[in-house]
Image (cartoon, rainbow, N blue to C red; front, side, top):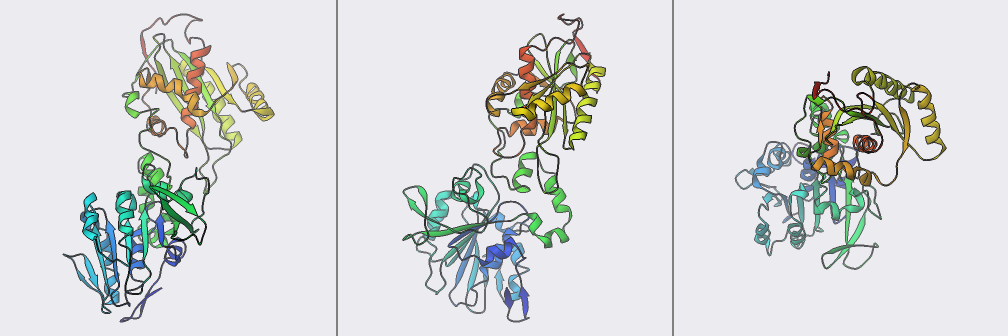
Length: 459
């Protein structure tokens, strides 16, 4: 709680992650991990902690001065907060002076060399808003400027959103990296020393070790924002796939433009599809249905065709999160629609290991009596199974039929292989491709070549 001496106004942190962030005693604390969690305001509140100490100086950095001054940024937000504590603001200098003789400044480190301007500086409280925008060398150099003669123990606070390629992920790996060998929970304190360029995590009490923690937050923890701007959550949900995974879901693994399936390799979706394709619909069943608060896999059925010239066409993708009964209905209805639309279509389904997989395939054999249906056992990792399809996509031999499913399909492919998130459509496409490379017959006259060069497949 921060009390304004003049108007007896109490400024409180929001219960939950923001309060936990302000309560930690770690030397270095990170906060956030997704958009809308109250990160910037948390930094502004933390900077108020020692304003009654004469000679106290705090500095909060953004990478550029434009970011400091932007609407909703540090300077803008501070104008509604710091005057409550009788602070005098100087807009040109972007600083606040408090009656007790303390000061809070907003600065930038736009260029790598800008860190050298702080040689000899003593900054008791140091904040970094959006730490992933700064270089690793800037951050660790500025730690040497985090010192104090005013009696306040020096400390650092940071906010940031996920970035899979950032050094920040390596530094905060116990909290944000799902592959960490020694994971830490939100708010847990760890200690590190630096040996050369390596961060080494050590036990508490190790000489010269610094303490670190990370407090995770999201828009769902920011009750005030949700009440004042209820449309903000919808805006986050409307973002492109990779941005949505980062800023809404807090995904530290998703990357833009993976190496296996680049968006541009598929070319522009087309309407005209050659006649006489070999056709296969391949199903990848989800293990569970959708439950609120969870993000389970989809049941996916990918329809792919292979032309006589060795070009493959992704014609349709069906996706569902449903009950087992709902999935059964989708598979049966899709098989009937495929037959009515295209004629001969082979239906294949991934068969999971063990007796449960055998039972599932036996069940669908009965449901799809009269159709060309079979279970397919897979081997190897998902990445290894996707590599043959990836090679054909890169060579320009895979085209997409224009349809409303195109964007979701391309988003998932471009982020593959994910360390989190979904890869169901890639699995379905890889399975259909493999079957078409094996034994699925042509959909025209038995074993015959196409008799018509092009037909327009109905939408």
